[in-house]
Structures are given as structure tokens and as C-alpha cells.
Length: 389
Length: 225
Image (cartoon, rainbow over all chains, first blue to last red; front, side):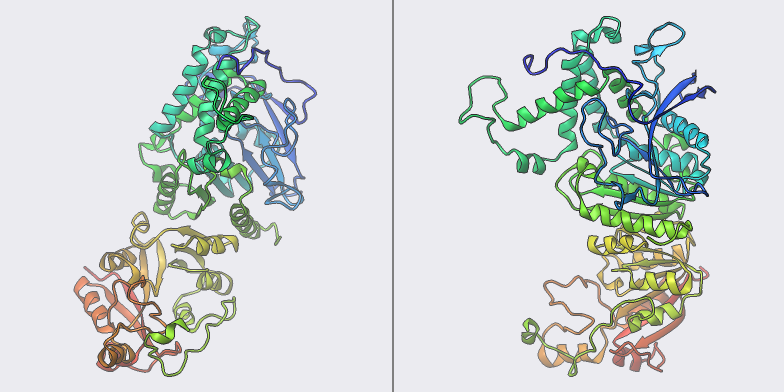
């Protein structure tokens, strides 16, 4: 393993990166009780806001996502993470809608996070960064949406952690959300998911290069720990069937096993590659903070343990999507959401998409997903007075 | 012609199903649609491809939602902008509060539920009115088929063989009326339909209707109890 991931330095956000930055002066009251600010929100937009400001769609990204929905990633050069969904003529049609995606609070792609400098100390925040929640991320996004002069978003959409943010938006700011699409999400993080996150965090903290979180001061990067965290997490994003279909027991560039600990199997080689490329673009402390935010997410707990109560004032039209082979955010979690929304007679659609691609299916080519969302959004657009497609 | 070996009970083939468009609705669904007030809050359980839902939304301005078991049905509905959840009548209705809808529709689905009695109870709880249609097992062709041929009946409405039928709780119109009475459910209106979906001018509770009607459509509400 030690040979798989080489030491490296973390690339810092560059002022030349595409997109916009908003400095929020007025502090945010975080769930942990701290007033945080001023801070920066880095965001990207696609398409045009109409004169009524009624065609805006907020895209909420997942744990390791970013605002580059449909742009090449400024560090890796990889294509945008939702190019299957966002673009001219696609489901999130940039000829029709104004798309906004902001890097989450605590992130590492331009929005203030633990690798940024704390103006009070002149040093990186590292572990002195306040522990943030999904609600805090959404509070920050709300500031951005207000700054853009948008009273009501036509839609808030996101997968996985992005879906958690969608639910938080609909619960906390119902009047600002015309429609909500949580994909492969849940109203709370399950024990199993917290357990996987803990494995990832422990891998990072066990890396000597982590330096008790102060690695930036020491010019080091806990690349091995972060890579292991990513490798473990990546398995949870797939499914047994998908792994088998993709790799089976195939060997990597060799005819027989080597009787050693080299990456004999293709699946090992693939995972090492996933880990290795991840550390080039992601900050280890951000990974700790954002996974923690997901762990703490429990929408019902905010409302006396009742999930229906969380949606008591919900006026949005919901479209909930799950995938048959997703064992990280299984259909049962989505069904629980549906029942909670039924209990408050909310307008809700729910579709379980048949696929063997696991949790990551929301990022992949899933024609049934596209057809469903296109129909849902067209229906919403008509109701919102945005006309027929 | 795999069905030729089975007992085809209709001497004359039923007219082919009409395509479901906004203006043109299958006749039995049309009977149901005509019972629904404009702008009503409606839940259609077992909504299939959304034929009735789409009609209610476009022609009656209803706030119509649906529940459907098949993924293809749900996707088709949501894909055309209807609010439909994937679920079934036995499992996914409990969360709705009392009187959540003006009308709850259960069309040709009751006989396929695991616990019809409980489903009926839920229908009249979550809807101020429930419209329930079901195939009448007392229909003379069904009786004749069993009597004359000694084989399980296969009709246009009950078009499965006994071994692959989803219809596990069949009843006659008289059975249904008796259950409603036992449960204290009020029957506000009832219509019986012939095999072309046209209403009979018969007392739906009489023996003749139980013999002649291929299906019954009942409007129910919570009793006073």
C-alpha cells in the first residue's frame, strides 16, 4: 500500500479558477453556536436568470463534489461532474433555466473551509474551524441566493449529501423552494453510513502526515490516509453487481497472481487510482468536516423527533428518487421520506430507478432518471408559469 | 392464441381498449371521473399509466396525486408531469392523515390487495369520499364458466389464469355491500356496469345487478360511527 500513494503537496485555490466569489460580511449563526464570518462562497452559474428571477435552479453537490457541474475541474481537468444532467437541451436545460452551484461551507474549492487562513491568527483554520452542519451549508447558500436577488428558487436538486441539503432547504425555507428533488438521499445519516465515515476519518488521522490536523503548517499532505478514506468510501458508492460487471476477478496487466501485495486485481488497481487522484483535488480536513456534517444530519431531530413535523409547512413539489442497488442510501430511506411527506399531504412523486450501478447511479447515464426528471420539471415549469418545454 | 385453451367466457370479444387521452377516457374510468367535482383533491390508488389522473388534472383542474406499484407506470406518470409515488395500497397509505383528500379512487385494484378490509378502512379515513370499482365475481359469465366448465373463470376484466393472477381477493357485489354494512361504511352512490363499461339501470344492491353486472362502482364515505 505504501508504494501506491506518493507524497505530494496540496494545490491551493487559484484566483483564476472559473466562477464567482461572494464575500459574506454578516456572520452566520452556526448550529454549533458560533457566529461565523466574514466568509467566502465560491459558486458557478450556467444559463441566464430571467427577468422575473423565477427560473433559477440550485444544484447542491455531494460530499466530494464542487461547483464545477458542467466545467472542467480546474485542478484535474476532468469534465464537469453532472454533464449528463446539466447543459443545453439536457434535463437541467441551460437554455431554459439559470443554474447555480456553490461549493459548500467547509469545502476546499473556494468557499471558506479548514484549509483557508483564519484572519485572526494568520494561519490555516485546520481543526480550529467550527464544526458545521448540513443546515449551516444551506444557510450559507441562502445568503448567496438572496445576494442574487432570487426570492424563490424554481428547483433545488442534489444527490446524496446534495439531497440532504435539498431536504433541509425544503424544510427550513419552504417558501423559497418551488420544487425539490432529493436524489439517493435520506432524512438522516444511518448508523452504517456513520460507521463508514468513521473508517475514513480514522484513516486520515492515522496518517503521520496529518500532523494532528496541522499539516499545512508543516508543508505536508496526509495523502495516504485520505486515499484510503476515498478507497473505502468509493466501494460504498458502487454495488457488488457493478464491481463484478466491471472487474470480476480480472488481473491487472498480468497473467497470474504474483504471490505478493501488489495490485494484482483490476479492482485493486482501480481503487488505488481513485484514491490517488482524489488527494490531488481534496483537502483532508475538509473531508473530516464534511463527513461530520453528514453524520450529524437528522431532520427529524430538529423537530422533536418527528419527520412529518419537519415538513409541516412544506409547500414545494417534491420528486424523490432512489436506486434499486443503492445500499448506502437505500430505497427504504426514500420511502420513509415519502411517508413523512404524505403525512402532511405534500405534493410528492417518488420513483425508484432500476439499476445495478449503486449509489453513484445519480452521476451516471440513467435514461429512466433523465426521463422522469425531465417530465417532473416540465410539469413544475408549467405550474410556475415558465411555459411548456 | 394462448387463451384459446382457456375458457373464453365472452361470446363476443370485448371492444379493444381505447387509448387514454385527455379527452377520451376508458368508459369505466369516465364513470368515475364524472363522479368527481372540479378542482377536487384526489388520490388515485393503482393509477397505472395515469390515464384518469391526467384527465382529472387537465379537464377538471383537480389537484390529483397517484400511487402505483409498477415502476413503468410510475415513471410514465411522473414523466408526464403527474405527482405519483411508487407504492401499494396495503403498505403506503397509512401515513396520510384523516381527510387528506376530497376523493380517493381505487379502480380495479381492491381484489389485488392483501387486506381489502383494512384498505377500505384506510380509504374512507384518508378520503372524505372513496370511489371503489371492482370486478363482480357474481357476474353470470363467471358463474356459468365455473358451473358449466368447472374451470376458473377468465374474462376480459379477470384476464389471468388462476396460477398467475394478481387477483387474490375476489368478491361479488353482494359480498362488497355486506362488508361495507358490517364496517359501518356508508354507500353514497353505486353504479353497475355491463361489460362495455355502460351503466345498468338496476338497483346495484339487488340480485339482478349481482348477476348481470360485470363490475360495480361504489362511492363510499365514513359512517357516523
